[in-house]
Image (cartoon, rainbow, N blue to C red; front, side):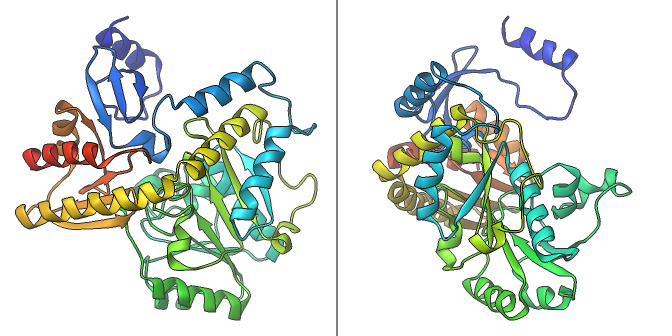
Length: 388
């Protein structure tokens, strides 16, 4: 089928929940993708910060091909080697002791919330305005976007207390005897690439220690080198009791997990939580390949250096174009806030050969593969300059 036929077929058969761009992507290599009509694009979006290694990275392809020939799925009634290998590899790189595999960020966050509530025996969790934790009913209740929650207000679970982000006084006022945890993104992605102050997290750590409250960090979008460190909370020198991961962990293969300290992990016993597909051998083979490649090819440093170069170039545009209000972010998670809607720029730049995203109405969000180079950044900045 050609592009128009494919789009017409989707419009006929799919439940209409996505406002898609009018192209059908066909294949990719590195930071580039091609659509069904042969048009080439530099991917500045990476599947919403998922394709950390870009497209068709040979190490990821080889890992998946090799595992497909052995085992794809075995169920969690049995042990499987890739899952155990990954846990042994990942956990020593963090302050956590145990993990639970899931299939997505929403599932990871749902499991983290359940663990916090069961471990503490309390009923409330403090979350932030403009946060995004998922679209299940539980994680939607934790998400700080009223427009997503509004259709389901009569059905949403209770116990989530929403406060402004980066406002420590609001957190202090929200704490009660029933506060089980504070749940935050180290940097808000969907909310507009909002970066808090280090003091904010320093004071949160003090509050949690003083009042015996858990800290849950949602690193679904910010993890695995996205912000120039393995996890974004390292930028703020903070530790948490529970952390959630997904997106970049599998390099494009659906996978998530939540990690916990030994003490907090003990809140769950066999039967308290479960999954059919989480932690299967195929996705864990992918996760092993992604983590190995990030570390072996020094992609943390590339994210940090190229990200800094990118921000400098964007700040030069800010001096030139009054439409740019702010440039913010860390590593290769950068937002450009505009004084007008950003939706039109998504279309303009796609027509110029670049895939980007607009979030929070007027923030252009850039989360390209961690393998991107300064030369590719230069091409994009030149195009953004023309679009502006």
